[in-house]
Length: 238
Image (cartoon, rainbow, N blue to C red; front, side):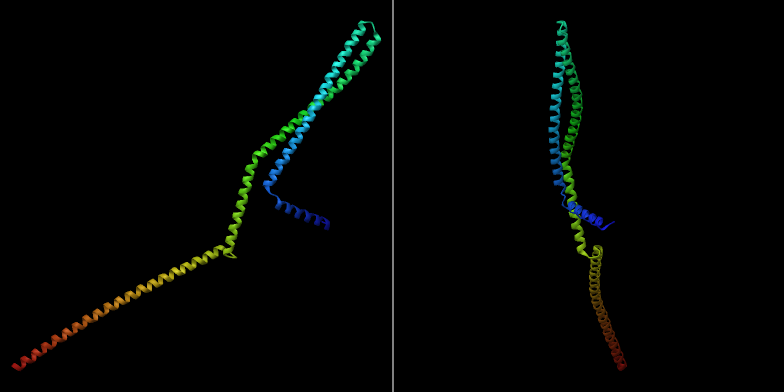
């Protein structure tokens, strides 16, 4: 590909991209409807003109046929009157009128066929316009839904991207790990606190046992002393 061809391709691509960006479906639909309506009005006027020409050809054909009939009648009257020269002239004029009538008849048939085709095309154009008009609201609604969906998708993508430059899920995982760590620390503190209370109660229980043993020792010593004192008193008496 030559340089000029490449430049031309690039220019066309850029222009098409600009046109695509500037193209508003709603405005384009309205413009299409305006163009179709304008074309329908123009076509309707053209069909009306063609019908008028058809009517003119029909009138000329009828007039020429009547003229040929009139000259034929004059030729018969001239023959009846014995005026052959006058009859010949009447027949020549009748022939001219018949030839003109044949031409008008051919043109009239062609005009009829043309008008019929134009009527069909006009009807097709008007039907297409009505169909497009009825679809306009539906198409615009679809375009608006698509536009809103695109905007919401872009906003969602931007929100997710703002959470983490790499992956939003990794940020969520990090938050979950941090929460689990906080939960573990809270549970550990609670367990330590519970253990501390248990130790204190066990120490209290330990002290109770010591006091009981101490009292028992005291009581045992006192009994032993009394027994020993009693034995000594008995020996002395003996």
